[in-house]
Amino acid sequence: MTQSRHNRTGFALIEVLVAVLFMGVFMLALLQVRNQTLHQFLRSDDQHTGAWLAEMKMAELVSQNLPDPEDEESWVLYENGDFAEFDDRLNRVNERINENWTERTNFSKFEWECTKELIFIGPDFIGTQEDLDAWEQPLDESGEPTDEADPREKAAARVVRVTLTVFLPEPRPSGIADEEAPQGRPTIKLVTYVDPAILFEAEPAEEEAPAEGAGN
Image 1 (cartoon, rainbow, N blue to C red):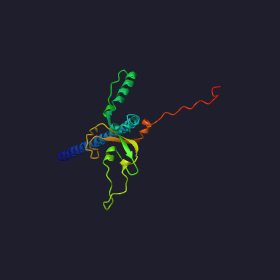
Image 2 (tube, one colour):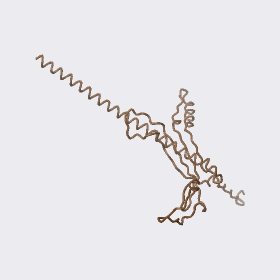
Image 3 (cartoon, rainbow, N blue to C red):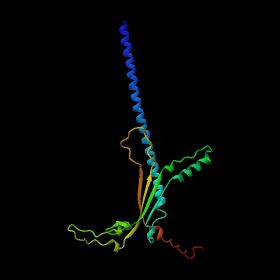
Image 4 (cartoon, helix red, strand yellow):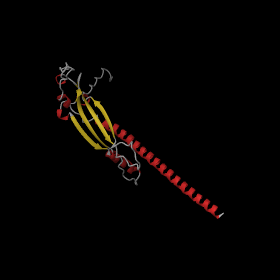
């Protein structure tokens, strides 16, 4: 009788230990899933914010400081910076509403760099001034020069290529191994083309003369 009671007690203790071990493994797995979900959410939030900032910055860049086709020294321009100005605006607005507002620096973690290049476009050529200077007569299969005209001797259209790269904040540590996580700092890249004539050759529209007798 005593031996049977000891056996039942021993089995009950083992069952409790197994149950505790099972619950510990389950909670650990649940915590990992929770951390991974939170990490993916934060990464997605940075992607959406970066895309929004990139669109606004591109709209600003294409409207000012473009390379001047008449000034060869400005054919390649480079700019960089961050979005701290949005933090300043946000803090100023909220300080007026809430006197207990504490300054935040979320947008300054996003940085950008931009290259503006004058691109030459001909019937058989598209490239920068450097590409144009390095152009060589192509050869056919037999090694003979082709009939392709030298783009340096032909008139070519000119457009400005604006390349914007927005650097997102450094990935936050998730606390778990993530083999699919991108290596290095994630970025968002936008490329657009602008006709420089919009800024440098645009002429103001002439005002139409009022019709005779319109004021009578």
